[in-house]
Length: 304
Image (cartoon, rainbow, N blue to C red):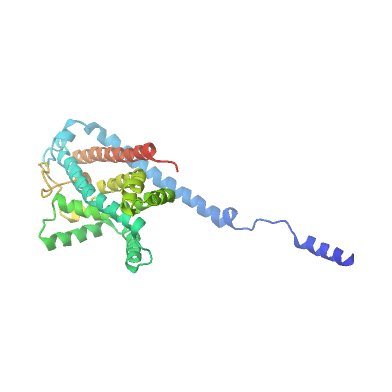
């Protein structure tokens, strides 16, 4: 009995109520970091809101027919427009989509469905794919400029701009497509293979159609990023003053970001107003693309 009493007393003294240590969410350092994080976030949002409101207030009066139907003017900015920049953006982004989407989806299908992760070259591709997604945009402009020089292609043409932007968004498309393929249940693949369907036909008729909503969403968001890029196109010799419509892959071009960059750098108030109006148009184009991505995701996404 004495032994049992001793064991009971030792056990009772050993079992103590758990108490939260002075670390984690309630520590002073965590609270200071949380407050600093919220202050930084609010400052960034306030600065963005101020920029958007200022641009809208300055440029709303120039949202007229001349903005969409007239070319840029050096002498009469009050009558100038962004027609060449709008059409050039469509040409360059369209070329980017044609170059990047098939290659990106094909690479994602190979890496996710057929590649052997034990092979050294597949592991090398995996590592470089993650790194390429964080490379600055201007590096792709330099790469494309060197490639164009090597093959004798003029730099300031639609095709060169499309290649640069395709290289820029290719890692994003591959990563987004792989995530969409990975979200498809394995049972769909196994059921198809169990019925005697080849792996390639299984991917083409079962896995890929099921992953289309995720692939489309990631692709549209990547193209939205390409639409707002200016640095690689400026490096390639994108024009800032164009008075003609692009008519082919070898035509000179300008885009909305390049045109805004040129107008915003001028001292005259008319150019500043024109730049604000072009910013509103560019934001509208980006919002339409993002809204399209949301509609595709919500309408065609399946719940497994």
